[in-house]
Length: 318
Image (cartoon, rainbow, N blue to C red):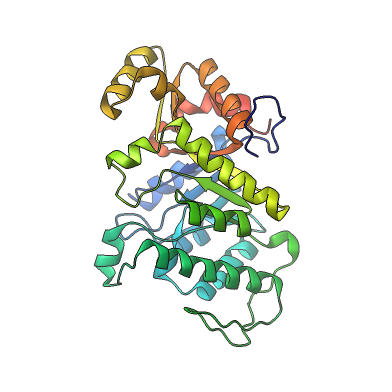
């Protein structure tokens, strides 16, 4: 839940995930996952890009037998797969993991994914429209024994999902994005909504960095909450960290970050995806950001795991 005041109670307890990007050796990869479980993290997620990371569905199926952590995609690129094949993969992973799989899905944004595969990268409005149809058919496949659908992009006929899932095994759906159209879709369909800077111009673009500021997140958060209220729905809010530093040199570090981003120190401290300070002050930042923005589910990068663990120990489940 997002709020325009600082007085409401949070909806969801804190949980913490780690996005694993680099593959390395299988042994090192499994040791990283085992370490996350020992340290108390809740979920491990894999991206979906054409790079040096494992293909997510096969890798997560392997992990389902190797860990008790929740597992998920963060996020699949909708344009690269038929959504009903995604639904089959998700249902299989949900069954194999006994309900621990979460399906994150996005419209696709990384140009190199499209160019390497020879897939046309359509305009954002087209990609978002296609994502809307995908969400409709994926959710229908989870809830109906058989269904047909007539859309602009997808036209399944009498589709029957196998394996079939009992309600307790149906995966949570996470939809992430930074534009108003994607976030409105998330409010309609998602169980978990990941609010991000828009990446339409790339991760390092000036406009992307500007969208990391507090006022941009608040605007997006309010848009999503208003839509949820209109629909009578509730959803868990997710934030992916952009930068984490926990230590005694945090004043120096935040000044360096502010200089790099071209903002003043106060604005850098207040950026929701930027977490800088001592363990105690980062705990306070997360509590404040849950009260103000609703962010109870946080993802961090694997390089930040050790430094961030004391925060997880204090806040997990609270």
